[in-house]
Each structure stands twice: as structure tokens, then as C-alpha cells.
Image (cartoon, rainbow, N blue to C red; front, side):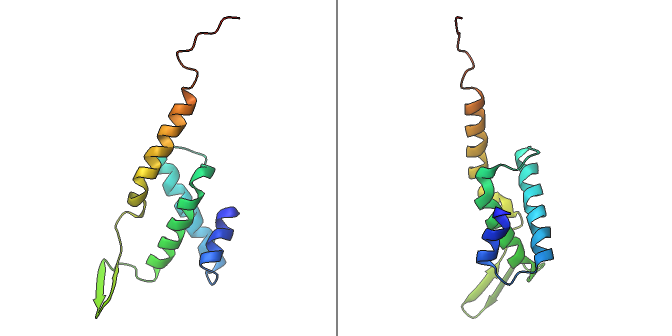
Length: 108
């Protein structure tokens, strides 16, 4: 619900059914990219940006680049590609927190 509300701040006129579909699509794609089954709360901002990008792209489906005088529209093929660094940092952070006690010997 948090993601939905944040998207509505940016795109108040978005169709609610379309928003539901784009949210599901964005979360599914991020989960697949990370190899997780539960969506990480830490990546909600990325999901909001991806949903807005998918919404913008839906009006120009199939356009790779368009120029009109000084106005230019272009879309990337892989919307999630620009977040690869963030995904890598998230995975590294999770691995680090999972290994915090690895190699530690404790006496009881």
C-alpha cells in the first residue's frame, strides 16, 4: 500500500487498475532480478520509480527514440538496468548481515 500511495503522489491521475498491474509487474521483475520471493522494503523507492517509468512508457509503446525540434523522447530496453548498482549493494548488504556471525567462535 505504501508503494501505491507514493505512486499516486507522482501520478494522481493514473487508472487504479493499471496501477495495480504496474505495481505487480514492477515487484515481480525486481524479485526475479534479485532472486528473492519476498519484496524487500528497502527497495520501495526503486519500485515507485519503475512503476512511474512503466506508466510513462505505456503511452509511447514501441518508441525507442523520437525527436521533435528540441524535445526528445527515448526509452531504455531494460528499465531495471539503471538500478543494477543499487541491487548489487542490497545483495551485498544482505550477505554481510547474514555472515556477521560466521567464523565467530563462542564459548558457553
